[in-house]
Length: 346
Ligand code: BGC
Image 1 (cartoon, rainbow, N blue to C red):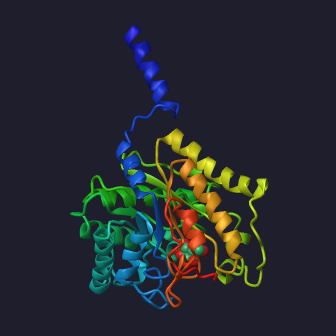
Image 2: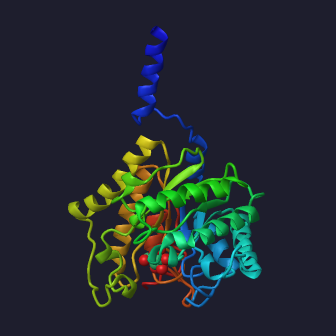
């Protein structure tokens, strides 16, 4: 009888969400190493590399490292580089380019995070009609990089939303991860929730019973500020919105991230804020204040992150003028000194 009571006691403990049956210490360790990174946005997630104005240049990786970033997120639009029919073979030249980018990141001491980005059919059409492509893409990526060290991270899908409902997404998470695990049993895989990876349906996410996962989210709150003037967010012409750091403004960010902190504690899973940033049409001082506030919270909560993005319209670097947004850099990496760099606002 005594034995049964003890078993029951532990069963209750393990089920109530406060004692963990899964050891995610390795994932937490990697998340610590991820620290603060930056997205190479506008490059591989365009239909044609370079068509959005960002070419993959080796010096970009070198520069990211030199500035003090420790990870680089590479958003990649694989879906336009595959054969139309099964087995949906990825174009070799494209795969070689991505391998080059991953190698260049690693050679510069950056941890690369590669994802599936802008697979529009998965969110705007019937996701299940494209599941074969999704799984085939992961199968090929996973095989391609299976011999790589644990300093390469996979992220299942950028911002699932619209037709990728929480229920369908849970299936894509489980099946995508299983596919990767066939060849990469221990690699860290990042997973997000439906509805753009925010907080709204986080409770519907079925977190896989796997030790090597990190939960990722994006923070652009409030969108009217971070995306002011952005046509793709329906905010063209709506500029001139400041962010001054009032109590209520800070609360918005704190409330958002503290939901993830709670989730992290309850589910014993590390958090990576894989995108956050402010569009160039906002005033520079507000951009700096917002980034500073968010990064302080990311550090306080022991999350890792990656700023959106390096050298396009949210960027910290302007390649044409060879100047830096040093105030934003300082907010991202407060222990570094950027005084010697040409500031874009001067
Ligand atoms: C999109 C980018 C966009 C950014 C900020 C990313 O997930 O892929 O095109 O600029 O979010 O809105």
